[in-house]
Length: 144
Image 1 (tube, rainbow, N blue to C red):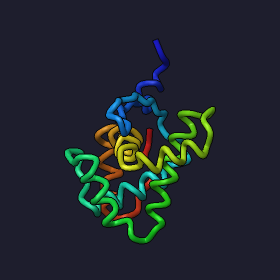
Image 2: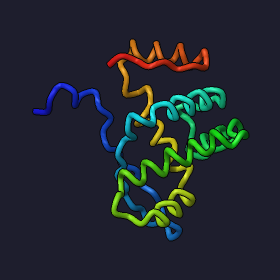
Image 3: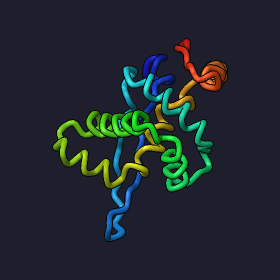
Image 4: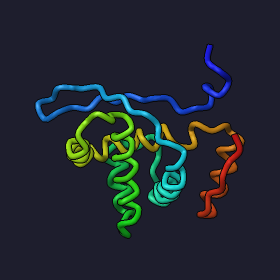
């Protein structure tokens, strides 16, 4: 039996991706470190502005996010979150190969990365508190 903190920590997640020949491959990714929380919250604000919904398809998420990522800074955050996820999940893989992979599958990777590292990992009380701050545009730190 794990210790009591394990119940509150985001878990590794897997996604199936299809190559150009239609073959599926399963990839397992680790959640982002706490140091990335600020970038995640900023992107969540942008996603809310874009009207992103959990019911959206990967393509819809990509289109909606691109419509609000016109300043370049937000897109750099997306790239940073995806590359960091790849690097911590596959530390022995060549960085150039990870960058090429990120470029090829950016919009398939981004939604699950945000989902596993987002408010869904918080209690209902903390989620409401952070949502209130996001609505104001300035997220605050939450309690554990």
